[in-house]
Image (spheres, rainbow, N blue to C red):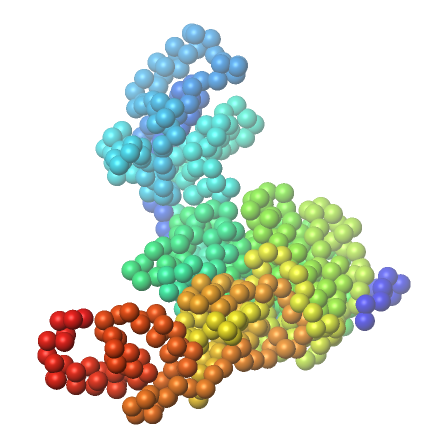
Length: 573
C-alpha cells in the first residue's frame, strides 16, 4: 500500500485535463450574499505615542478629511533617536498648535485601556475604582472612531488588532502608505460575519464548571470571550473584531463554531467531490494543496496532479479536513504557509499537523502524507507523491455533525491501515481520549451525563447504568469536574482499536426499591452515600432517616403524616 511510486509514468497533460474537467463539474462553494457587519466612522482620530512623532503624524494628516485629531502622549521622546533641530520643533509646534494634546504620566500610560473597533473605540484611564473616559474629556464624544498608535510598544499588543487600530513606527519605509490607509478610514464599511455559534453543541461550560477553551486559546485577534451568564458561561465571538482567521472553527471539536466562508461541511463535501471528479476524468496521483486564496496567482499554475483548495485563511481547515482529503483519495496533502501569518495561527497549524501525524501513525499510515511547504517553493509544490493514493471506495460521511464526519474519516483510514489496539500519545489538549471510572467511588448519580456536551456518556434506560463511547469524547473534562465523588479521570490519547466506536458499560448496579411502594428510584450506593452525609440533619433525625430509602412521592407523604400527628414538629427543622 505504501510503496514508493517515483518511477511510475506521469501523464502531465492528462492530469491537467482531468483537473480542468473537475473544476467544470464541481465549483468551489462561495457565499454570494454573506451576512455582514457594518462600521461607521466620522473621522475623529486619536494618535498615541511620543509628542514629536504624534505631532508629525497630525501635521501629515492635516487636510486628509479627518473630522478631528487628538494627541495622547504616552511616552517620552527617545533622546537617542535622530531628532529635529530646535527650530524644526518650533515649526512643528506652530503647525499643530490647534490640535488637542494631553500628556500621560508613566503610571497613567500603564493604566490606559482601549476597547472597541472602527467607529466605536472607547479609551479610558483606570484609576482605582474610577474610570476616566478620554473621548468625553478630550473631544466631548462617546468614542473615538480610529486610533493611530506610534508607540514603541502598542497599547493594544495584539497580533491582529481590531479594524480602525493602526500601528506605525514613524520614519519606516511603510509609514507613509499606512498613514494614507489610516486617513481613508472615514465613511461606512462592511465586512463578512465569518462565523456562527450553536451554543447547544458547545463544550465550554456546564453546571458551573469550565470545560473546553480551545477556541479562546487560538484566536490571534482576541475576538472570542467567555461571557458569564445568569446560569452558565458561554463563548461569544465579537464579529466586529473578528478577522476570519478560521482557527477557532478548526479547533472546535464539536462543530459549535461554524466557519461560513464557506461552511466547513460544504468545504469537506466539495473536496471529496473534486477528488471523485478528478479520478473519473482519468487524473492520477492527486496531491491536495491547502493554500490561502490571496496567494494563488493565475500565471503560476502548479503541476497537473496538484489540486488547490483556496481558503479564506489557512486556519479555516484543520486536521479533520486534511485527513478527509487522504481518505477521499488524495495521495498527499500539502499545506502552504505564508510569511505574514500571525504567530498564534502558525502555532495552531503546527499543533494540528502534530495531531494529524499522530493519528496517521496510530492508524498505520506514513506521516509524510501531510507536509508543509513554503511560498515560492515550486519544487516541493509540484513534487510527485511518495505514496500512492488510498482507495476512496467505501468512505461514507454520515450526518452533518463535525465529530460524526471526522469519525467516518478515521474509520475509513483505519480500514485501510492497521490498528494495534494500543492508546497512542497525542499532543496535549487534543480532543481524543477515554475515561477511567472508579466503580468503588461512583454512585451512578449521573451528574457526569448531565454535564457531557456530546453523546459520549449515557445513562441506562431500564436500570442504573453508566455507559461510554470513546469516539464521541472531546476530552473537555466537564464530566470529571461535575462528579461529586471524584470518580472520573480523563485518559488522553487515541485508541487504535475498533472498541473506540463501541459503547461499553463503565458501571452498573441493581436499582434500589422504595421501602414503601417498591418503586425503583436510585442505587444502593447512592442511598448509602446520602445517608452518611445527612445522618446529622434534623430533618432525618431518628426514624426519619428511613425517608432517604423512600422515593420522592413516599417521602413527601411521610412528612405530611408526621406534621398531621405533630404540627409543631416543623419548628424543629
